[in-house]
Amino acid sequence: MVGFGEYLLKILLPLYSFAIDVISTELQVESISLASNGSTKQILAVVTNPSPLHVSSSVLPAGIPIQLSTLQGHSLQHFIVIYSILLAYICGIDKKKYKLLLTSIPFYLAVEFIDIPLVLLGSGYDLIYSNLAPDLISGSIQIMAMDFLNGGGRIALSIFAAVCSIGTYKFISNGHYNYLLLLLFSNAKQIKI
Image: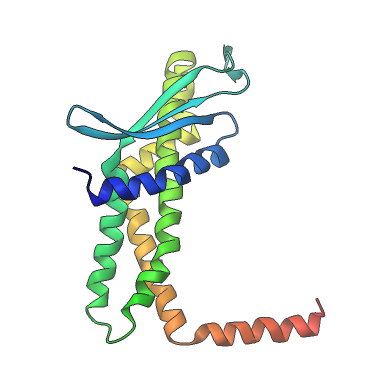
């Protein structure tokens, strides 16, 4: 039986693939899918290096496939945290609750664009450096980003996205965007763009 989480992840897989290709200039996605390893559900990505990868004094030949994985629950954690906070906030709103949920979508997608691709890439670089240059592991930005996200940064990112959603909702609901647009266009006329 396929649940809501798996449907959501299937929709997000192309976003993860695109994000990995944008973030990394050295690795590109060959395939990305959902898989089960026993009772553990994972997001699996296979990446290759289109050109030889020089790591310290070693070289990883071009075209070597590297399998990356992270738990599906990591991705679903964002949805749960963000929308739990927003639903708790909605209880105090009298009208137009849908606007808050709509303003949260870009923030939710941004969090997904950042987290899962960085964790997958971090695990790939961890694998590469472990085999070719173990001394570089501690200084790798990709591995530090993965460790940060796995060590509590994921929840912090979700909470930040929920707070930004609420702030954006309040900004739009209070009509402040009209004043901002007025300022922008009045200054644009003076500058004569």
